[in-house]
Image 1 (cartoon, rainbow, N blue to C red):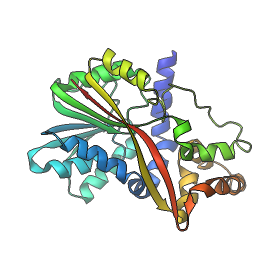
Image 2 (image 1 turned 90 degrees about the horizontal axis):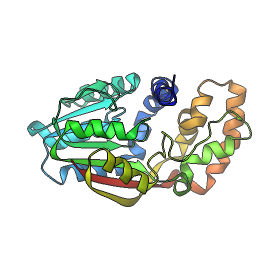
Image 3 (image 1 turned 60 degrees about the vertical axis):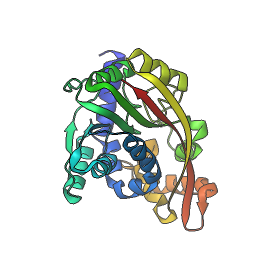
Length: 280
């Protein structure tokens, strides 16, 4: 198996196992945390006339349903994600909210979309995981209409998002097998480098590429912090399968590290992101 095949298999396994389970378990909390990012993205999508939207890496369907609600009966929204548990949660959300959306379990890098079928392609934190990003965005370019829009929200660097790595830095002495984050590799911060992003989009056929730096205030209840740490990210995935004793030791080490972000009954941090726009 070559390196790209291995990376694809690893990402698929991640989001169909601990990564996907953790996200679904905290669906309500994550909706609250990232609502400000979702609002900015949905507003950007709705800022120009659009009728057929593709939501890439749609996860549990929050942005998919939000856009479908904004479009109403005049449009359609399709969500695609490699994670079966997350698409199952998205389908339940759509049923619960009576949203008419199409939800597909597939890899957007290789899925055979109908050519020129979407006038907007969007994503909230869902496009940084492709093992061959140029191939993926070329595939999405073929799915876009002529003049179709690309609207993405992605993370900037880990240095600009210290909240996101607090748990793993604090837990590292207790969890020696924590994965090492490497620049530009598939993962949460895979689109941090703006020149790399421009190169990927240009090479895959997109034009009028713009990256806007945004810093979005996010909050959630302090009472949810332990649940957040126990389910999400590299630390959460390990704790999902650890012993009660190790879990207690890690939480005891990690919880104080979040003190700079705790303000009374709330956890407050800034999400340092790129809002990316391009044209087909």
